[in-house]
Each structure stands twice: as structure tokens, then as C-alpha cells.
Image 1 (cartoon, one colour):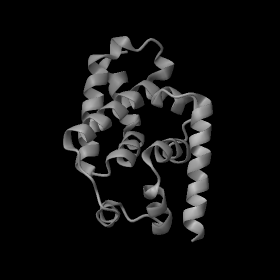
Image 2: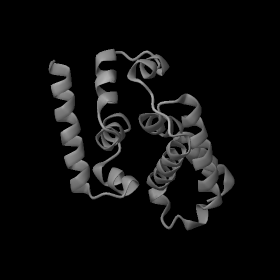
Image 3: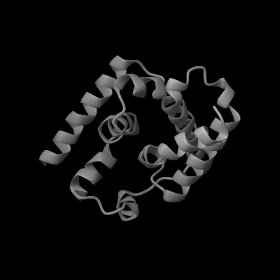
Image 4: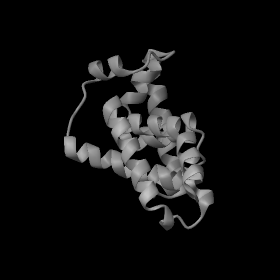
Length: 151
């Protein structure tokens, strides 16, 4: 993969990368840092990608690792009140807040599937969990969202 093709593919994934990193970090600055680091590491390690068909999944895995590294370094917590202010005004604030109330291990697969259109297999590869685990987490996330929105 040459530089232009690599850049085009990364740029094509920018929105997806931002939304995935936002679901973990919830800070614009941290999301952009994670995306930049992920792109840089992906470029440096591009020769380790065995099958170019899995580029998006591979890049997502690198991004997730960067997000977790930022979390470990900064060890910050965000009160839900502060988090709501950082969002671009969503169409349904209630849904947005309910989604943010989910634990990360349930929220992340749901965001990756519902908002990013990733398949269960792609999510499983990116998160290094089985397809059955992805299915279960998404189902539990939907159940918790239903309960939260019924109240």
C-alpha cells in the first residue's frame, strides 16, 4: 500500500474513528490525539497488515489501543453534566444521555454496530472478542437502553 492509498483510506475512516474514540474518551482533544497516534502507528506498522481487506478493522484496533492508553495516562472522569455540554447537539438528548450511561463494554459494540455500521464479525475482530460475545453485549445494551428510556 503506497502513501496516497494509505492516506485516502485513513481519511475515509476519520468520522468513524472520531465517533468510536468519542464513545471511550468523551473529550474532543483526546479523540483527536488518539486518532493522530493511531494513524501514525498504522503508517509505521503498515507492513504488519496481512490482508488489506481488514484495513478498517486493523485501524480500529489500533485506535482502541490508543484510546485505552490515553485513559490510563490521564485517569480522568467526566461528570455526565459536563459530558452533555461537549456533544454536538444531538437530535434526541434523552437517547444520547441514556447511551452515555451504558458501561463502556456494552456501549462500544452498540456504537460500532448501530452508528458505524460495522458487522458483528468486524466488531469482534476489533475488540478481540467472539461474535457471540458481541451479540450478547449488543443485546444487553439494547435492553438497558429500553429500561432507561421507559422511565
